[in-house]
Length: 68
Image 1 (cartoon, rainbow, N blue to C red):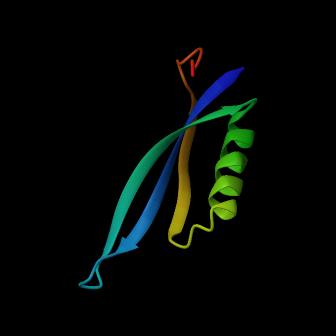
Image 2: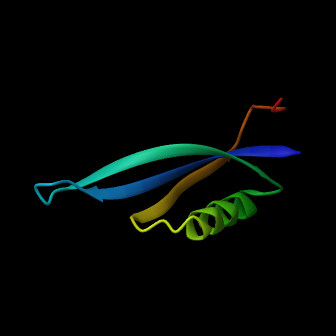
């Protein structure tokens, strides 16, 4: 089991019409960088994300286990 930290950048328009960028980092259980990026895109699509977004980076995380 490997975890990847994927950075997603969103573009939001404020009430003045200005575009503001916001970055979020998500933790993804995947086999490779490519799979982690694909899982994030699928997740956002399935959630009905309407803002413009782009996957900025994906790197292997130092987290070895997640305990629920």
